[in-house]
Picture 1 (cartoon, rainbow, N blue to C red):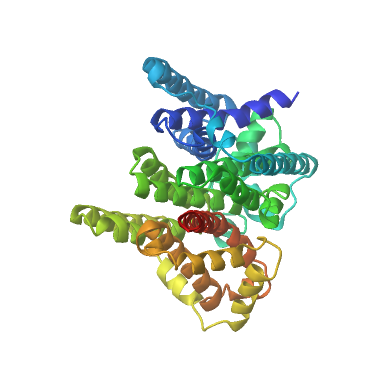
Picture 2 (picture 1 turned 120 degrees about the vertical axis):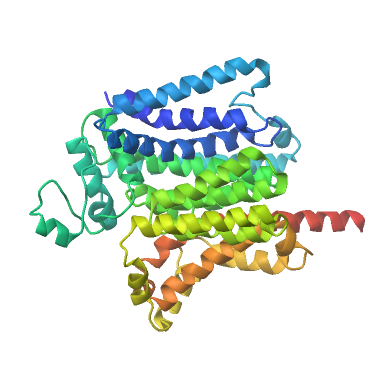
Length: 465
Protein backbone atom coordinates (compact mmCIF):
# COMPACT_ATOMS: atom_id res chain seq x y z
CA UNK A 1 0.00 0.00 0.00
CA UNK A 2 1.25 3.46 -0.92
CA UNK A 3 -0.83 5.30 1.70
CA UNK A 4 1.50 4.68 4.65
CA UNK A 5 4.85 5.64 3.02
CA UNK A 6 3.26 8.58 1.19
CA UNK A 7 1.72 9.89 4.40
CA UNK A 8 5.02 9.44 6.22
CA UNK A 9 6.91 11.31 3.49
CA UNK A 10 4.49 14.24 3.81
CA UNK A 11 4.35 14.13 7.61
CA UNK A 12 8.11 14.18 8.26
CA UNK A 13 8.64 17.71 6.82
CA UNK A 14 5.75 19.02 8.93
CA UNK A 15 7.11 17.46 12.13
CA UNK A 16 10.69 18.49 11.42
CA UNK A 17 10.00 22.16 10.82
CA UNK A 18 7.00 22.45 13.12
CA UNK A 19 8.63 20.99 16.24
CA UNK A 20 11.81 23.04 15.90
CA UNK A 21 9.92 26.24 15.13
CA UNK A 22 7.63 25.58 18.08
CA UNK A 23 10.67 25.73 20.37
CA UNK A 24 11.52 29.28 19.40
CA UNK A 25 8.15 30.87 18.68
CA UNK A 26 6.74 32.81 21.66
CA UNK A 27 3.62 31.29 23.23
CA UNK A 28 1.24 34.27 23.52
CA UNK A 29 0.59 34.76 19.82
CA UNK A 30 -2.71 34.89 17.92
CA UNK A 31 -3.21 31.97 15.53
CA UNK A 32 0.00 30.43 16.80
CA UNK A 33 -0.96 26.95 15.61
CA UNK A 34 -1.44 28.09 12.01
CA UNK A 35 1.78 30.10 12.21
CA UNK A 36 3.88 27.18 13.45
CA UNK A 37 2.33 24.51 11.23
CA UNK A 38 2.48 26.65 8.08
CA UNK A 39 6.00 28.00 8.44
CA UNK A 40 7.22 24.74 9.94
CA UNK A 41 5.98 22.70 6.98
CA UNK A 42 7.64 25.09 4.55
CA UNK A 43 10.88 24.76 6.53
CA UNK A 44 10.66 20.98 6.34
CA UNK A 45 9.93 20.97 2.61
CA UNK A 46 13.01 23.13 2.04
CA UNK A 47 15.32 21.28 4.44
CA UNK A 48 14.76 17.67 3.40
CA UNK A 49 16.15 18.23 -0.15
CA UNK A 50 19.21 19.85 1.45
CA UNK A 51 19.66 16.78 3.64
CA UNK A 52 19.54 14.60 0.53
CA UNK A 53 22.03 16.87 -1.22
CA UNK A 54 24.37 16.79 1.78
CA UNK A 55 24.22 13.01 2.12
CA UNK A 56 24.90 12.62 -1.60
CA UNK A 57 27.85 15.00 -1.25
CA UNK A 58 29.52 12.71 1.29
CA UNK A 59 28.86 9.62 -0.81
CA UNK A 60 25.66 8.28 0.74
CA UNK A 61 23.25 7.05 -1.99
CA UNK A 62 19.89 8.77 -2.24
CA UNK A 63 17.70 6.77 0.08
CA UNK A 64 14.45 7.34 1.94
CA UNK A 65 15.86 5.41 4.89
CA UNK A 66 19.04 7.49 5.17
CA UNK A 67 17.32 10.85 4.78
CA UNK A 68 14.39 9.69 6.90
CA UNK A 69 16.71 8.58 9.73
CA UNK A 70 18.45 11.96 9.72
CA UNK A 71 15.10 13.74 9.73
CA UNK A 72 13.69 11.43 12.40
CA UNK A 73 16.76 11.99 14.60
CA UNK A 74 16.26 15.75 14.45
CA UNK A 75 12.57 15.27 15.27
CA UNK A 76 13.48 13.16 18.32
CA UNK A 77 15.95 15.83 19.45
CA UNK A 78 13.23 18.48 19.16
CA UNK A 79 10.79 16.31 21.14
CA UNK A 80 13.45 15.77 23.81
CA UNK A 81 13.97 19.52 24.10
CA UNK A 82 10.22 19.98 24.47
CA UNK A 83 10.13 17.40 27.24
CA UNK A 84 13.13 18.99 28.94
CA UNK A 85 11.33 22.30 29.01
CA UNK A 86 8.27 20.69 30.54
CA UNK A 87 5.39 23.08 31.05
CA UNK A 88 7.41 25.97 29.66
CA UNK A 89 7.27 24.49 26.17
CA UNK A 90 4.01 25.39 24.39
CA UNK A 91 2.23 22.67 22.48
CA UNK A 92 2.23 22.86 18.69
CA UNK A 93 -1.56 22.61 18.61
CA UNK A 94 -2.77 25.38 20.88
CA UNK A 95 -6.31 26.45 19.94
CA UNK A 96 -7.19 30.12 20.27
CA UNK A 97 -11.00 30.21 20.56
CA UNK A 98 -11.14 33.73 21.99
CA UNK A 99 -10.67 35.44 18.63
CA UNK A 100 -13.44 33.39 17.05
CA UNK A 101 -15.80 33.73 20.03
CA UNK A 102 -15.42 37.51 20.09
CA UNK A 103 -16.71 37.87 16.53
CA UNK A 104 -20.39 38.57 15.78
CA UNK A 105 -22.42 35.52 14.74
CA UNK A 106 -22.57 36.67 11.11
CA UNK A 107 -18.78 36.98 11.04
CA UNK A 108 -18.40 33.54 12.57
CA UNK A 109 -20.64 32.03 9.90
CA UNK A 110 -18.71 33.75 7.12
CA UNK A 111 -15.42 32.58 8.66
CA UNK A 112 -16.66 28.97 8.71
CA UNK A 113 -17.98 29.18 5.14
CA UNK A 114 -14.62 30.48 3.84
CA UNK A 115 -12.74 27.80 5.78
CA UNK A 116 -15.01 25.04 4.43
CA UNK A 117 -14.57 26.35 0.87
CA UNK A 118 -10.79 26.24 1.31
CA UNK A 119 -10.91 22.70 2.66
CA UNK A 120 -13.09 21.64 -0.27
CA UNK A 121 -10.75 23.33 -2.72
CA UNK A 122 -7.71 21.59 -1.27
CA UNK A 123 -9.49 18.24 -1.49
CA UNK A 124 -10.38 18.74 -5.17
CA UNK A 125 -6.85 19.90 -5.94
CA UNK A 126 -5.51 16.84 -4.18
CA UNK A 127 -7.67 14.63 -6.37
CA UNK A 128 -6.33 16.42 -9.45
CA UNK A 129 -2.78 15.67 -8.32
CA UNK A 130 -3.61 12.01 -7.70
CA UNK A 131 -5.42 11.55 -11.00
CA UNK A 132 -3.05 13.40 -13.31
CA UNK A 133 0.46 12.30 -14.35
CA UNK A 134 3.27 14.77 -14.91
CA UNK A 135 1.96 17.10 -17.59
CA UNK A 136 3.31 20.70 -17.82
CA UNK A 137 5.98 21.56 -20.39
CA UNK A 138 8.59 23.04 -18.04
CA UNK A 139 8.02 20.25 -15.54
CA UNK A 140 8.92 17.59 -18.08
CA UNK A 141 11.74 19.54 -19.76
CA UNK A 142 13.53 21.31 -16.89
CA UNK A 143 12.69 19.83 -13.52
CA UNK A 144 11.53 16.20 -13.53
CA UNK A 145 14.35 15.27 -15.90
CA UNK A 146 16.73 15.61 -12.95
CA UNK A 147 14.33 13.87 -10.57
CA UNK A 148 13.98 10.88 -12.91
CA UNK A 149 17.73 10.45 -13.44
CA UNK A 150 18.63 10.96 -9.78
CA UNK A 151 15.94 8.52 -8.70
CA UNK A 152 17.12 5.83 -11.11
CA UNK A 153 20.82 6.28 -10.27
CA UNK A 154 20.20 6.91 -6.54
CA UNK A 155 22.76 9.66 -6.94
CA UNK A 156 22.83 13.29 -8.04
CA UNK A 157 24.73 12.62 -11.24
CA UNK A 158 25.74 15.89 -12.92
CA UNK A 159 23.68 17.75 -15.52
CA UNK A 160 25.67 19.86 -17.99
CA UNK A 161 25.07 22.13 -20.97
CA UNK A 162 24.30 20.52 -24.32
CA UNK A 163 27.71 21.23 -25.84
CA UNK A 164 29.51 19.78 -22.83
CA UNK A 165 27.30 16.69 -22.97
CA UNK A 166 28.14 16.25 -26.66
CA UNK A 167 31.87 16.73 -26.10
CA UNK A 168 31.83 14.09 -23.36
CA UNK A 169 29.74 11.73 -25.42
CA UNK A 170 27.13 11.62 -22.70
CA UNK A 171 29.47 9.63 -20.47
CA UNK A 172 28.43 9.88 -16.78
CA UNK A 173 26.65 13.19 -17.43
CA UNK A 174 23.15 14.20 -18.47
CA UNK A 175 21.62 17.28 -20.02
CA UNK A 176 18.30 19.08 -20.28
CA UNK A 177 17.15 22.56 -21.23
CA UNK A 178 18.27 24.06 -17.91
CA UNK A 179 20.97 21.94 -16.28
CA UNK A 180 21.84 24.74 -13.84
CA UNK A 181 18.43 24.84 -12.15
CA UNK A 182 18.57 24.36 -8.34
CA UNK A 183 18.13 20.90 -6.89
CA UNK A 184 15.43 21.52 -4.26
CA UNK A 185 12.28 20.84 -6.31
CA UNK A 186 13.58 17.74 -8.17
CA UNK A 187 14.80 16.26 -4.90
CA UNK A 188 11.34 16.66 -3.39
CA UNK A 189 10.02 14.49 -6.21
CA UNK A 190 12.85 12.01 -5.62
CA UNK A 191 11.96 12.00 -1.91
CA UNK A 192 8.36 11.00 -2.63
CA UNK A 193 9.36 8.30 -5.11
CA UNK A 194 11.96 6.89 -2.74
CA UNK A 195 9.26 6.65 -0.08
CA UNK A 196 6.99 4.45 -2.22
CA UNK A 197 9.87 2.61 -3.86
CA UNK A 198 9.01 3.32 -7.48
CA UNK A 199 8.65 6.16 -9.97
CA UNK A 200 5.12 7.56 -9.71
CA UNK A 201 4.36 10.76 -11.65
CA UNK A 202 1.27 11.53 -9.57
CA UNK A 203 2.21 10.80 -5.96
CA UNK A 204 5.53 12.60 -6.37
CA UNK A 205 3.64 15.86 -6.91
CA UNK A 206 1.79 15.83 -3.56
CA UNK A 207 4.35 18.25 -2.03
CA UNK A 208 2.74 20.96 -4.20
CA UNK A 209 -0.56 20.46 -2.36
CA UNK A 210 1.28 20.45 0.97
CA UNK A 211 3.06 23.66 -0.02
CA UNK A 212 -0.28 25.32 -0.82
CA UNK A 213 -1.77 24.36 2.55
CA UNK A 214 1.40 25.44 4.38
CA UNK A 215 1.44 28.79 2.59
CA UNK A 216 -2.19 29.39 3.54
CA UNK A 217 -1.60 28.55 7.22
CA UNK A 218 1.52 30.73 7.40
CA UNK A 219 -0.29 33.55 5.60
CA UNK A 220 -3.23 33.46 8.03
CA UNK A 221 -0.99 33.17 11.08
CA UNK A 222 1.33 36.03 10.13
CA UNK A 223 -1.63 38.28 9.30
CA UNK A 224 -3.03 37.65 12.77
CA UNK A 225 0.36 38.42 14.32
CA UNK A 226 0.47 41.62 12.25
CA UNK A 227 -2.79 42.73 13.85
CA UNK A 228 -5.42 41.68 11.34
CA UNK A 229 -8.72 40.41 12.67
CA UNK A 230 -9.58 36.73 12.28
CA UNK A 231 -12.17 37.41 9.57
CA UNK A 232 -9.93 39.75 7.58
CA UNK A 233 -7.09 37.23 7.79
CA UNK A 234 -9.37 34.40 6.65
CA UNK A 235 -10.84 36.49 3.83
CA UNK A 236 -7.45 37.32 2.38
CA UNK A 237 -6.24 33.75 2.90
CA UNK A 238 -9.22 32.64 0.82
CA UNK A 239 -8.24 35.16 -1.86
CA UNK A 240 -4.71 33.76 -1.90
CA UNK A 241 -5.52 30.05 -1.98
CA UNK A 242 -8.26 30.45 -4.58
CA UNK A 243 -6.16 32.36 -7.12
CA UNK A 244 -6.69 30.51 -10.42
CA UNK A 245 -3.03 30.43 -11.48
CA UNK A 246 -1.87 29.28 -8.05
CA UNK A 247 -4.48 26.50 -8.17
CA UNK A 248 -3.27 25.54 -11.64
CA UNK A 249 0.27 25.21 -10.35
CA UNK A 250 -1.00 22.67 -7.83
CA UNK A 251 -3.29 20.73 -10.16
CA UNK A 252 -0.63 20.79 -12.91
CA UNK A 253 2.24 20.30 -10.47
CA UNK A 254 5.88 20.23 -11.47
CA UNK A 255 6.92 23.90 -11.67
CA UNK A 256 8.98 25.62 -8.98
CA UNK A 257 7.08 28.93 -9.04
CA UNK A 258 4.61 27.97 -6.29
CA UNK A 259 7.43 27.02 -3.94
CA UNK A 260 9.31 30.23 -4.70
CA UNK A 261 6.18 32.33 -4.20
CA UNK A 262 5.50 30.65 -0.85
CA UNK A 263 9.13 30.98 0.28
CA UNK A 264 9.46 34.64 -0.69
CA UNK A 265 6.12 35.47 0.90
CA UNK A 266 7.13 33.65 4.10
CA UNK A 267 10.34 35.69 4.19
CA UNK A 268 8.46 38.96 3.68
CA UNK A 269 5.87 38.18 6.35
CA UNK A 270 8.46 37.15 8.94
CA UNK A 271 10.61 40.16 8.03
CA UNK A 272 7.74 42.58 8.59
CA UNK A 273 6.70 41.03 11.89
CA UNK A 274 10.33 40.95 13.05
CA UNK A 275 10.67 44.66 12.34
CA UNK A 276 7.45 45.27 14.26
CA UNK A 277 7.97 43.00 17.26
CA UNK A 278 11.73 42.27 17.20
CA UNK A 279 10.83 38.64 17.87
CA UNK A 280 14.03 36.61 17.40
CA UNK A 281 12.17 33.64 15.90
CA UNK A 282 10.62 35.90 13.25
CA UNK A 283 14.05 37.29 12.37
CA UNK A 284 15.48 33.80 11.99
CA UNK A 285 12.51 32.80 9.85
CA UNK A 286 13.02 35.81 7.59
CA UNK A 287 16.72 35.03 7.14
CA UNK A 288 16.08 31.32 6.51
CA UNK A 289 13.38 31.88 3.91
CA UNK A 290 15.26 34.71 2.18
CA UNK A 291 18.31 32.47 1.72
CA UNK A 292 16.10 29.55 0.72
CA UNK A 293 14.71 31.57 -2.20
CA UNK A 294 18.05 31.04 -3.94
CA UNK A 295 17.74 27.27 -3.46
CA UNK A 296 14.35 27.02 -5.20
CA UNK A 297 14.78 28.81 -8.52
CA UNK A 298 17.10 31.25 -10.30
CA UNK A 299 14.68 34.14 -9.83
CA UNK A 300 15.05 33.61 -6.10
CA UNK A 301 18.45 35.31 -6.19
CA UNK A 302 17.13 38.81 -7.00
CA UNK A 303 14.18 38.29 -4.66
CA UNK A 304 16.62 37.49 -1.85
CA UNK A 305 18.59 40.63 -2.67
CA UNK A 306 15.48 42.79 -2.17
CA UNK A 307 15.92 42.46 1.60
CA UNK A 308 19.28 44.26 1.45
CA UNK A 309 17.90 47.77 0.74
CA UNK A 310 14.98 47.06 3.09
CA UNK A 311 17.41 46.29 5.91
CA UNK A 312 19.58 49.30 5.10
CA UNK A 313 16.59 51.65 5.26
CA UNK A 314 15.01 50.18 8.39
CA UNK A 315 17.79 48.86 10.62
CA UNK A 316 21.03 49.97 9.03
CA UNK A 317 20.26 53.67 9.30
CA UNK A 318 20.20 53.34 13.11
CA UNK A 319 23.27 51.20 13.65
CA UNK A 320 26.44 51.68 11.60
CA UNK A 321 27.73 48.24 12.56
CA UNK A 322 24.56 46.64 11.20
CA UNK A 323 24.87 48.66 8.02
CA UNK A 324 28.45 47.51 7.51
CA UNK A 325 27.46 43.92 8.22
CA UNK A 326 24.67 44.12 5.67
CA UNK A 327 26.98 45.57 3.04
CA UNK A 328 29.61 42.91 3.78
CA UNK A 329 26.97 40.19 3.50
CA UNK A 330 25.83 41.66 0.21
CA UNK A 331 29.37 41.57 -1.15
CA UNK A 332 29.92 38.00 0.04
CA UNK A 333 26.60 36.90 -1.41
CA UNK A 334 27.41 38.53 -4.74
CA UNK A 335 30.80 36.81 -4.87
CA UNK A 336 29.13 33.49 -4.04
CA UNK A 337 26.62 33.89 -6.83
CA UNK A 338 29.28 34.89 -9.35
CA UNK A 339 31.55 32.04 -8.28
CA UNK A 340 28.81 29.48 -8.71
CA UNK A 341 27.88 30.69 -12.18
CA UNK A 342 29.63 31.04 -15.48
CA UNK A 343 32.48 33.60 -15.17
CA UNK A 344 30.91 35.50 -18.05
CA UNK A 345 27.61 35.91 -16.22
CA UNK A 346 27.83 39.71 -16.25
CA UNK A 347 28.44 39.79 -19.98
CA UNK A 348 25.61 37.35 -20.54
CA UNK A 349 23.29 39.56 -18.52
CA UNK A 350 24.26 42.67 -20.42
CA UNK A 351 23.54 40.91 -23.72
CA UNK A 352 19.97 40.31 -22.58
CA UNK A 353 19.38 44.02 -22.03
CA UNK A 354 17.83 45.56 -25.10
CA UNK A 355 15.59 48.47 -25.92
CA UNK A 356 12.20 49.15 -24.35
CA UNK A 357 9.58 46.52 -25.26
CA UNK A 358 6.17 48.16 -25.64
CA UNK A 359 4.58 44.80 -26.36
CA UNK A 360 6.07 43.51 -23.11
CA UNK A 361 4.36 46.34 -21.24
CA UNK A 362 1.04 45.51 -22.90
CA UNK A 363 1.37 41.84 -22.06
CA UNK A 364 2.32 42.57 -18.45
CA UNK A 365 -0.64 44.90 -17.92
CA UNK A 366 -3.03 42.39 -19.47
CA UNK A 367 -1.65 39.55 -17.33
CA UNK A 368 -2.12 41.56 -14.13
CA UNK A 369 -5.28 43.59 -14.78
CA UNK A 370 -7.22 41.75 -17.50
CA UNK A 371 -6.61 38.01 -17.31
CA UNK A 372 -8.29 36.03 -14.56
CA UNK A 373 -5.03 34.61 -13.23
CA UNK A 374 -4.74 36.39 -9.90
CA UNK A 375 -8.37 37.42 -9.27
CA UNK A 376 -8.40 41.20 -8.80
CA UNK A 377 -4.99 41.42 -7.12
CA UNK A 378 -3.78 44.33 -9.26
CA UNK A 379 -6.83 46.42 -8.44
CA UNK A 380 -6.77 45.46 -4.74
CA UNK A 381 -3.13 46.52 -4.41
CA UNK A 382 -3.66 49.80 -6.23
CA UNK A 383 -6.70 50.69 -4.12
CA UNK A 384 -5.02 49.66 -0.87
CA UNK A 385 -1.90 51.70 -1.64
CA UNK A 386 -3.97 54.73 -2.61
CA UNK A 387 -5.99 54.55 0.62
CA UNK A 388 -2.86 53.73 2.63
CA UNK A 389 -1.30 57.00 1.51
CA UNK A 390 -4.05 58.79 3.45
CA UNK A 391 -2.72 57.31 6.72
CA UNK A 392 0.39 59.18 7.96
CA UNK A 393 3.54 57.07 8.21
CA UNK A 394 2.11 54.05 6.39
CA UNK A 395 4.96 53.63 3.91
CA UNK A 396 7.62 55.66 5.74
CA UNK A 397 7.35 53.90 9.11
CA UNK A 398 4.76 51.15 9.58
CA UNK A 399 5.37 49.22 6.36
CA UNK A 400 8.70 50.68 5.25
CA UNK A 401 10.63 47.41 5.25
CA UNK A 402 8.18 45.22 3.35
CA UNK A 403 7.27 48.11 1.01
CA UNK A 404 10.91 48.67 0.02
CA UNK A 405 11.50 44.96 -0.55
CA UNK A 406 8.39 44.57 -2.69
CA UNK A 407 9.09 47.79 -4.59
CA UNK A 408 12.53 46.44 -5.49
CA UNK A 409 11.02 43.11 -6.53
CA UNK A 410 8.34 44.74 -8.69
CA UNK A 411 10.97 47.04 -10.20
CA UNK A 412 13.15 44.08 -11.19
CA UNK A 413 10.09 42.24 -12.48
CA UNK A 414 9.19 45.18 -14.75
CA UNK A 415 12.80 45.63 -15.88
CA UNK A 416 12.97 41.95 -16.85
CA UNK A 417 9.89 42.06 -19.07
CA UNK A 418 10.25 45.61 -20.41
CA UNK A 419 13.97 46.04 -21.11
CA UNK A 420 15.38 42.56 -21.75
CA UNK A 421 14.89 39.81 -24.30
CA UNK A 422 12.38 38.25 -21.92
CA UNK A 423 9.90 40.86 -23.10
CA UNK A 424 8.77 38.24 -25.61
CA UNK A 425 7.61 36.14 -22.67
CA UNK A 426 5.30 38.98 -21.65
CA UNK A 427 3.93 39.69 -25.11
CA UNK A 428 3.03 36.02 -25.63
CA UNK A 429 1.99 35.49 -21.96
CA UNK A 430 4.35 32.51 -21.65
CA UNK A 431 6.41 33.74 -18.71
CA UNK A 432 4.95 36.85 -17.16
CA UNK A 433 1.99 35.17 -15.47
CA UNK A 434 4.12 32.43 -13.95
CA UNK A 435 6.53 35.00 -12.56
CA UNK A 436 3.61 36.93 -11.12
CA UNK A 437 2.77 34.16 -8.67
CA UNK A 438 6.26 34.45 -7.20
CA UNK A 439 5.35 37.97 -6.01
CA UNK A 440 1.55 37.73 -5.69
CA UNK A 441 1.43 36.20 -2.16
CA UNK A 442 3.75 38.87 -0.76
CA UNK A 443 1.87 41.68 -2.47
CA UNK A 444 -1.44 40.32 -1.18
CA UNK A 445 0.00 40.24 2.37
CA UNK A 446 0.83 43.95 2.13
CA UNK A 447 -2.61 44.65 0.66
CA UNK A 448 -4.29 42.72 3.48
CA UNK A 449 -2.48 44.71 6.17
CA UNK A 450 -3.31 47.99 4.47
CA UNK A 451 -6.98 47.05 4.15
CA UNK A 452 -7.08 46.02 7.80
CA UNK A 453 -5.55 49.34 8.87
CA UNK A 454 -8.05 51.25 6.75
CA UNK A 455 -10.98 49.34 8.28
CA UNK A 456 -9.64 49.84 11.81
CA UNK A 457 -9.16 53.55 11.16
CA UNK A 458 -12.70 53.85 9.75
CA UNK A 459 -14.12 52.00 12.79
CA UNK A 460 -12.30 54.35 15.17
CA UNK A 461 -13.58 57.41 13.30
CA UNK A 462 -17.15 56.15 13.59
CA UNK A 463 -16.77 55.64 17.33
CA UNK A 464 -15.31 59.12 17.81
CA UNK A 465 -18.11 60.68 15.82
